[in-house]
Length: 108
Image (tube, rainbow, N blue to C red; front, side):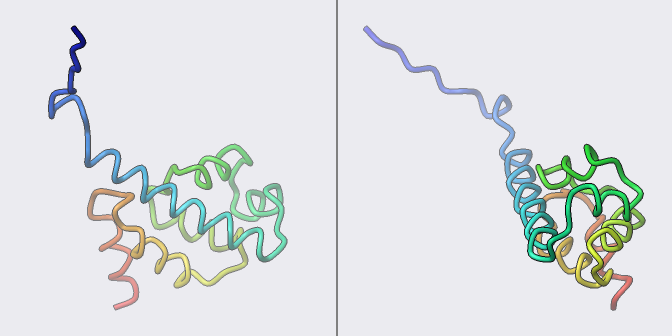
């Protein structure tokens, strides 16, 4: 006899999974902008004052936690802050907190 065991609701973090999916989409957007402009990882990270590993982490789905980090990434991409702010708002589910709303207040 075979028995299937389903995870308990508390063992499966749906909200965490959703945040991760949004974070990966945000990272893909960042990577797409960088590649479209022909900017290498080294160039983007250097302009942003980040290590290549830090930049790669964002492209892989680790979202920036502060407005200053978002602005630094805009410099790295040679992009306007408004462009990156709009990405933060578009993929706001990646943060799961009040951060995207704080950024949108810079432009309202």
